[in-house]
Length: 324
Image (cartoon, rainbow, N blue to C red; front, side):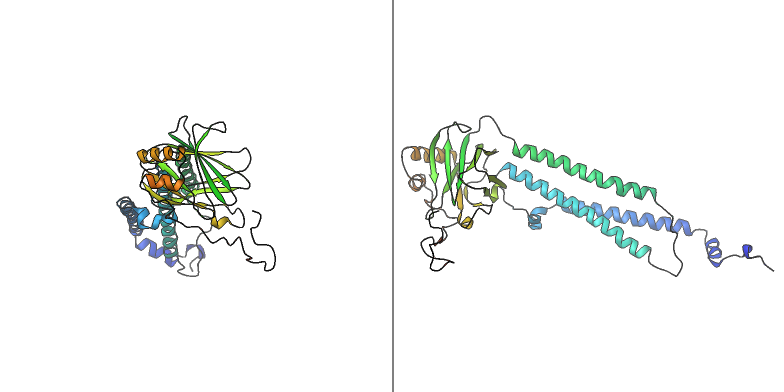
């Protein structure tokens, strides 16, 4: 008779019959980790060896920024997306590896009380480190983007109203500065904000009625324009590419919000000085643009049909927009 406690289980016999099984498992595990590391290194080399933003459409971020601030924000976004993808690929790899490695092989349940201290340390500390690094670089870029200087080359007061724009060229900063020239938009003529390239520019925003939002996609600045005594101020260190760029109101400000467009026209510093001198001599915006060889009217957008002189949705009542 053999006592129950002295019975040898088949699993134990198989284990003892393969003294090198543990070493083989260790080699396989090391091989998998090496493969994962090689894949991560290959991905990193691939991503750093090409323009990732252009290859993937900027991951949803506007491309073609024309200011150094726009490039810094764009680079931060692309780096954040790459980091997120790297973490995602690593996590997905672990998930699929666990699905294959620990799939069900019988009716016996695995040990339920085992823990892995290094793994617990990894998934506790790694997220904290990732968030800390992203916060660090975000704080650096944000501080650099929103900083202002004492004496910018050009100061423009952006005045928003329902539903158009007025751009005042100022001789200083703050509400006490004087306006030397002005551009006013109408329902028939898109206002054109003319600015020089390679000069620092300060924008001081204010609204006559409700909250609007000043937005030029290529500048990557979208700043709310508040009514009252609040002046939202920001600067760009330079506009690096001459050309015409569409501007929008990016805040739902009322019935004719969709009609509230403008155009940013970036010209050479010499042409800007000539444009400003012509405006100060009494020329209209279109005459001043023609004098420096520019198109007199907006080319990136056109006035919408506001239909303010006829009934739109309330037949038989007063025209929509009457009295605005």
